[in-house]
Image (cartoon, rainbow, N blue to C red; front, top):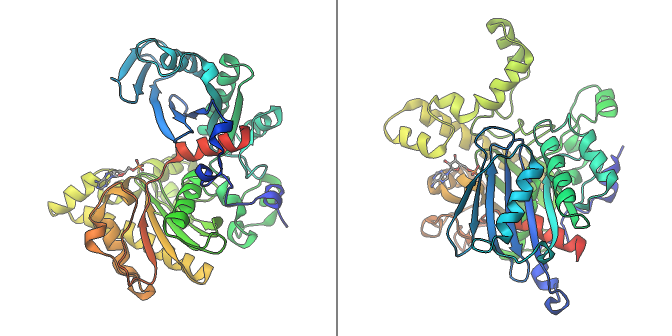
Length: 426
Ligand code: AMP
């Protein structure tokens, strides 16, 4: 049984490393606007694809709520803050375009300089795995997947429709957060529940943070000088949301998040893997329903739940340093879960060539990276403490005699979306 999207899923995108594929002289206009819509927010970046530099970026907050504010940061110029009502995403996009074209704070003369718009879209169900130029069918799929991504998909669609309204004729590209995970084989994506739920409702494991895993695994292959076809790479995306992926030749074979981002690693506020019977037990004892239970698992669990201190790793580490035992327990449990997944994925791939750390904790938390790697002596992993003493910079952090290359690769989802958008619209 192969789901529709899997048949065409090539996994490792051609777009990885477009810098070498572009014949720059052929393209004069190559600024791509990248949009990431949340239910009441809109993040954007304008990227010049000639050199992949960020021309401007910004954030609209409190869309549809009183006190809307746009913070616009043109590169090399002062930050520009506009407080103006934004009743919906269309108005927000209009203000973003005004800011981009502003005589003083702007970076383009007109929207003609924007060649296309790339959108982060959460969920495509089993319909799409590859990024795609938006048409009516794509919008229909985004709509059909509202119940799979109830917070994000409606906002993502609003963002697309807002861009269509304010920039008619401009191409919009959807880059799916679930896309990377769609190349997982059936044995990795099936839940062991009655098969009819998969058939009726497409209940399966999808995986999230797909753009980040695609980007980082691709960059790890290039940066580590690994075999692009066969390299076995584990990417640890450790941020407030955390997930881990296993890929061979850039094609995902397993990833830790499931039908929703709740499965897998212990996160800032999410529990990750849990015995489902725990839910029934707590519901009965506390007199709460399943919706409230899910809210607890999503928002009040994870390292916040164990430590009782914070969901932020810096706060938890400060508490640990001050002798807080629950903070220590939270960090130990977080690290242990990552280590278990690395072991499982190494077994699933029959080996691993490289492990890449990324996202807030993965890029910045020197001690946590070291603590994870200390468990991996059985794989021949050896960390170079001096190389590991770094934050937010691409680097090999294992020693020359390590059997597995360990790397720090800062993620860049916006650039990954821009590369996909360019590839599909150039
Ligand atoms: P993200 O969701 O990728 O933005 O990651 C956010 C997480 O990264 C938060 O829990 C932060 O505490 C954590 N983080 C950022 N910088 C550091 C740092 N220097 N040391 C430890 N954790 C950090």
